[in-house]
Length: 109
Length: 114
Image 1 (cartoon, helix red, strand yellow):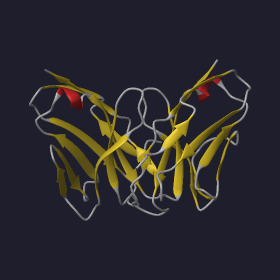
Image 2 (spheres, chains in turn blue, yellow):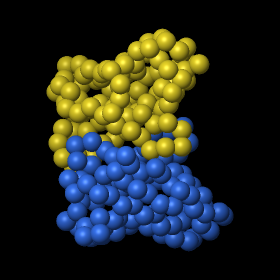
Image 3 (cartoon, one colour):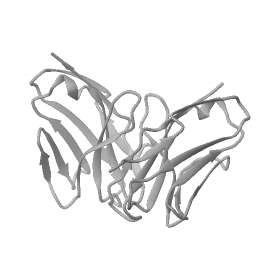
């Protein structure tokens, strides 16, 4: 059973545009929500993370929005660049990570 | 500082064989977790170790086993390989075991079972 549901499965955005990926969870024991970026043939790289006592966190062009009551969180990639083309995974952590199914982002130049 | 290292990078095995995958965590990190990532899916949790003790186990058959050594490195063993075991096996390290600690992944070992 998928504990974290992620959408969309894929998206295409023009260079300079905004990419938005959404995730939802059910288990209220989760208390840490990281996002990972993965390039083909590589391991996932920690991109940005948020804890449930914070509603928004921004690092450079990446922003996480968190809605605790709705049990939803999202990643916004601002000013998308071709180098951002990758698969993005949301995850939720109690003691282990439970991952979403991933979103493949393609940034067109 | 070196990140998480895994060996080997790639491995091809035949059904029924046994495989051992190895992982060295980031220096100073004491917890290691193993994940299986099938192509096109998110990683699935297999095991978590801290201070040489198993602290968590995912929904995988008993053919999968792991251990952690005094230097905090770890190995994952899979017996009686099946075609469905073909995947990228990822090792992640974190500073300690507990709720909400960052986990950093290695490059993975690509296992192909023929």
